[in-house]
Amino acid sequence: MMKRIMGISLLVLWLAACSQEAPEPAQPETEKVAENATPEAPTADSIQIGKDYHSFSNPEQMKVRNVALDLTVDFDRKVLDGSAVLSVERIAKGAQTLMLDTKELTIHKVEANGAPLEFELGTADSFLGAPLSINVPADVDEVKIFYTTSPSASGLQWLTPAQTAGGEHPFLFSQAQAIHARSFIPLQDSPQVRVTYQAVLRTPPGLRAVMSASNDPEAALDGVYEFTMPQPVPSYLIALAVGDLRFKAMGERTGVYAEPELLDAAAKEFEDTESMLIATEKRYGPYGWDRYDLLILPPSFPFGGMENPRLSFITPTVIAGDKSLVSLIAHELAHSWSGNTVTNATWRDLWLNEGFTTYLTYRIMEIIYGTDRYKMEAVLGFQDLEADINRLDPNDAILAIDLRGRDPDDVFSNVPYEKGALFLRELEQRVGRDDFDAFLKAYFKEFEFESITTDQFIEYLEKTLLVTHADVLDKARIEQWIFSAELPSDLPLEESDAFSLVDTARMQWLGGELAAADISIDNWTVHQWLYFLNNMPEEIADDKLAELDAAFNLTESRNNEIAHSWLLISVKNWYEPALPRLHDYLTTIGRNKLVKPLYRELAKTEQGKALGRQAFAEAKDGYHPLTVKANTPFVE
Image 1 (cartoon, rainbow, N blue to C red):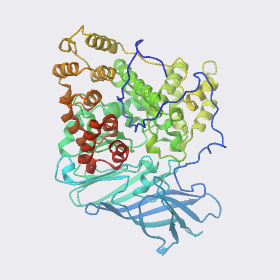
Image 2 (cartoon, rainbow, N blue to C red):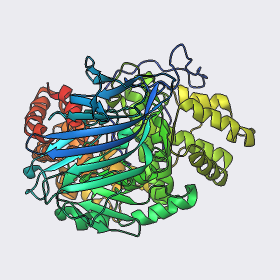
Image 3 (cartoon, rainbow, N blue to C red):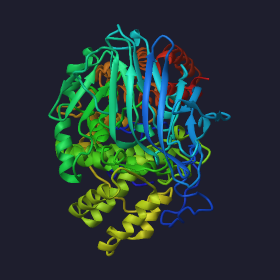
Image 4 (tube, rainbow, N blue to C red):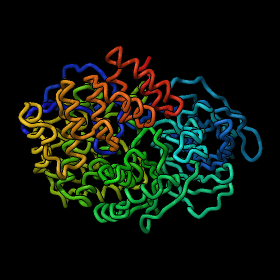
């Protein structure tokens, strides 16, 4: 992708303004396909459409319809211990084997109606876990599995009191996407299998348990909590957390759970959530999940946010004090329509979740905060996409990506998010905003509470927009967007006048025409600061960095996104005054989007690698397992 945004050459660095979190594999760039080539869609010979290559389950034979959990939260042993009752439906006549996904689970016994059932735990794969096969007699439609999780379960993080804001109580939270639900529940861990669920969580008294289900903020802290999720959800959206949590309402249907030390700041920062909810309903149909609350997690949470229905999990790193990073809230809310209500059927189809949600995020931000802010965030988002496409293997720049034999955690990037959103923006501009809003509203209704494939989406387009707007839409171009690594020509890009001023200031300062202290930063937004820093040249003299730092105190910035950009520049140029802050940053934040690029850059030099190893060794016990996995290669 070789288009430039403002008519000048941009030196693009990584930093996202929106909520996507992207492990960023550094891979050599290879020759790209011709820009206007029309790719062939994958065939059944290459990819079996609709098959989930990341699950051992057999929903085409027997499908789990409901899960009922009864789990004890044991902080001393760092395990969940209890049972899961699975209600199953025979899809194939005469089927008697139920295949489930597990990962490092100890299966004690399996029974139905009090009688034992035969079961076998298969050989474990490094990232898929181990298949659990259960012999289900013809007269049985419900099985009960007694199990215990591992202290190292990839989908759970156990925090000591010292690793929390309050410092007095332990904390537990789950993160099931992409294939980590199997590490704390034996189930069919595939997004194409949707289940309703109920749960009883037993905790130490005085702590509050919450789930991606119905939560009662007035529940007594007696150590026994009951939950119900009546809408069918994919397994990766089953979530739980336990800690010293309080609740504060932000609107009629919105509120925030957090440790007491963070509660007021979070409620103030995210007070526009109710307005976002109302605006999204107006455009795209009723909110189908009753309430929309937020849970503010400790800073070790590996992502910006996770769209768990009814209760989005949110990093505290976006509490900036000025609402400059709340596009993340808009993103997680938008998932209530795209992702939670209409879900990707396999991880090949992730762009159906994230591309639609990123598009909706931009629309929500424009409605609530205005066109100028939307345009700035769209420009920054495009830069993130440009950086990833230039770095990734071409096969990883395809929306309908082939993930066979690969860990889906390792190939997340900005592609499904920003490229998917750009594709939808083109559809909007070609058919008109009103018609495209009507299309999306109908799409969400058509596939409500279903999991669909890329091919089903294309079929739906063929029956709708490609019929009603045949004069402006072309199926070959649509397939190029979805199945080609290369972006089409004539992209629907946004420009921002606010960035023109930043470009001028940066160029004058770099050229010695303007002192840093004389740069007019009055009313600069966080987005302008990010654009200013992200587009600096790779090499900057030490005295120039010191001048910037003295003028704007960047090393001590409390905005985590601005600090990230500045620290990345500091590592590339080994600006020593910023290194103590870098160490502190790496040892207090576990969000992969912020720490992984720093570790990767540190690993390029011996002195950097030494600093990275020291910080990683100190921080590792407090990092989430996914953060540990993502950054270990840079410190080995």
